[in-house]
Length: 123
Image 1 (cartoon, rainbow, N blue to C red):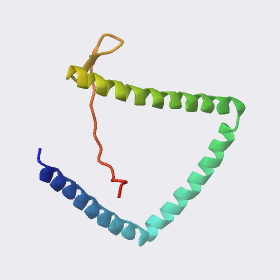
Image 2: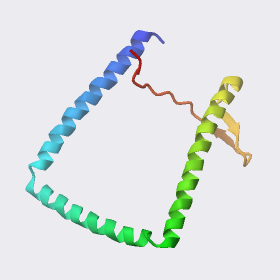
Image 3: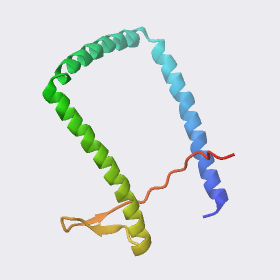
Image 4: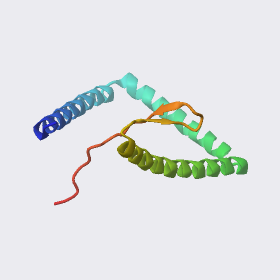
């Protein structure tokens, strides 16, 4: 793959993202000018506020607080395990040149190696 092809693809993506931003701004303007939409949005905001208050009352119970803490701890562990697994699968792919493994249950599983372009933080 030539660098110019990659550069053109990046430009195409950036152009389409820019076009979408302009289009979204136009839609937002239309919604802001609609009285019916503004009324519905205000009603939804009031309902959301009421829902949030009721949720806070339920979540403030000690048994719910413990459940929330357990979920947060599990999510942190899951995140760490996924990061480790990602590195392990990448290494496995490099060594074995395959994107398939046998899972703990004995079933064949495929995995993906994903690359993302980020902004350059240098100079």
